[in-house]
Length: 306
Image (cartoon, rainbow, N blue to C red; front, side):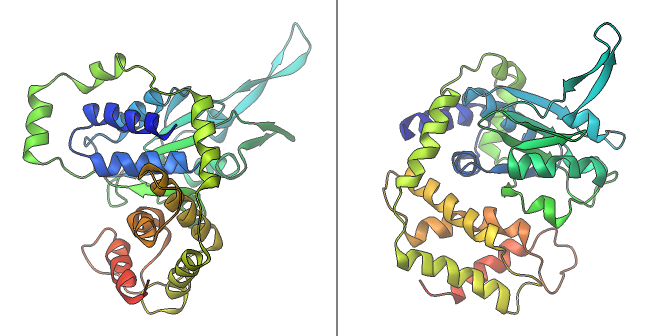
């Protein structure tokens, strides 16, 4: 089953060139059942990566462009009165899909951003007093521009905590950029991508993660890392229990991608920065640094013995 996940990675690598690690991390996030946030400068391939993942995994998806005038009803849906039937008819919003591509999510107002909180946590939405379940599986793959850019609204901590991983693509290296310049247009490639997996196969792969063994010693290590973030001198607030669970689940998915039936400390170390960095706030801000939590987590891993 996980061999197909590797096929998905290979196909996406042909679209997003030179970003094998980030693509692997993104697949680990979705395999673990989490939502994905991709933060970077405009034009480096964030939206293209989200499209390629959704298509390759065989998932139905909707793309929603977040803007400052977007309303919560534009996300979850609204009821409109039907004169012929003499009743209100609910029209589902774009959130009723398997993958919601929330493009430039931090350009929407906090009120609109909060309309996704229930959907991301409970896989359901409550509209006009009625709760409606979302399709399974359900993922939010969101992109956002750096907070220092004009027209952005910072995501609140409660929203960030619901994203299992936050990735940054960065600029391509010289060889990858030359391949992009000389090769076919990325949008044209997306139009011809086949679905490597089906949604039922992805759900089955997610169920297989429950069989990945985590020893008591490994759980002790995760707890030690969480405790160090709460008691040390690096972060203003430590990891939440949700963050600890996310870290362990992502480590299981990484181990599965490596072909193992058990988790080792190296699996935790491989995913801790994309899982935890966006959830933590350093005690001391450093001028000119957009996100120094990843650097502090590297320091944290040195301090906490395996």
